[in-house]
View 1 (tube, rainbow, N blue to C red):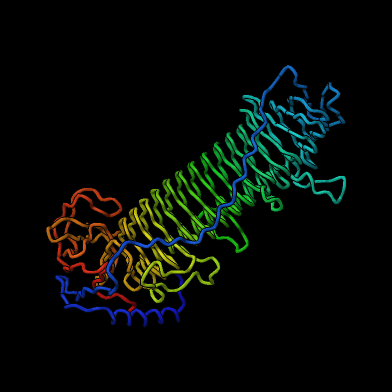
View 2: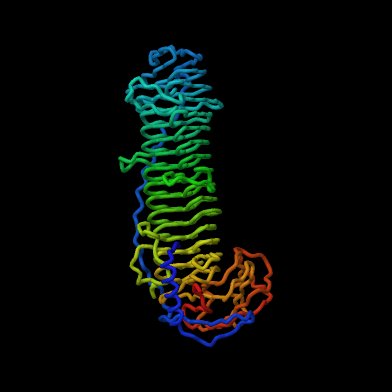
Length: 609
């Protein structure tokens, strides 16, 4: 969390008063010569957790995808159009030829072959049946305008013939017959719905503005399509659907875009498969309303990558939705100067494999964020996962962050919230705000320079495992929350600095929690071992960074049981996230012994002193 100096000193005063009011017991001295004072935070006896329903923001209805027209090629009925460098040959009344310009005026199949050095193919028909343009070894160029312009067609399909290579390149500056005209504005431009299919290859060079653009909808059903654009790569104003194929986009603006902001059921992107390799100065995928992804391979680089610096008015996000982003599967490698996954509304991850490196937040939404499954590896971020209501139901999640790793915050708050401990409530159910972090499952490993878990509201944990290697500076904590942290299940292990350290547990928590202040900074790799009175291993853990405190909650912490804490020593076997699970531990120095008599036990003193 970010704090100003006034808030810093107010918090320090409050923490000192809080610690002074805690119930004291006999001071013990550990073998490390650090005074240790087991402290029990007074509260009511633990009871069954009360369920509090967080405010929710309903997800935007996802528009039904518009499927591509059935692509059946009848070569016998195709009208041949031959490109002869500076002229065009087409012996059919449906094709009107004027020098290096050919206009198709009727529905049907048309096959293009050859090279057009400086000319234009125009489609202009009011027929209800589709126009299908078969590109079979074509090179189209225009020095003043768009070489392929669909002015009017109820249904238009570009079919890339098998084993064919096709090229389209437009002018760097357009000359319009009417000075007020601003269309076409892409190398391949359609005023109507456009479908691209087939197994051939298409290379588009958009020198003026966009590479491929439709003022209506655009469906990519196949092909190997490579686009370079002065602005946006591939744009379907109403919708953009990728069903298959291989896309390579290099755009100075956005990569794939659907930007209809006038109709509530338009402005969406759907990806159902394919391979997308996109490098952009702006967003890789951006939709005014909804982005839905069911599968596919995504390699996205935006804004120069995660180490680039952006201007304040530049958006260079990996995948961005104006209302709702939902991912059911796929493989994502995103290197973004801005957020990797972003929604102004709701965001849901149901599955998928993610490798994310960002110069800002990795996964960000302004309302609700839900992760149900998947493998998420955030190797670089400012803040890893951020939203107003975050729900983690499952998944294998790894977060490295230069600020907060998982941050539940109110987007309308000026500074993201308060200081944590000063407004702490005795009970989760007493919280009346709208900022929540729910952890119901998953395996979560965090390496945070700022707070590990940060909620400018309340946290509830019912399952899963969270391991935090947190901050080393006192103004942040491995666990930080404003209101309450209710825990009824799962395992929480959080090592970090001591000044702002908190642990889980409130009056209604049915699982016991522990917070140990060690009184000095211990080097990374130092083993912390907790065992019960029978010598059973409860925890053997080696933080990766230097630390001053450890927060711990586990179903194995039993009321009335006595535990011993050891520092150093050695552990056998392999570790997972610093945890040695088999319990083969050779003791180091005993630090302290304590007995659990309340739901939250604090040992030693923290505070910013």
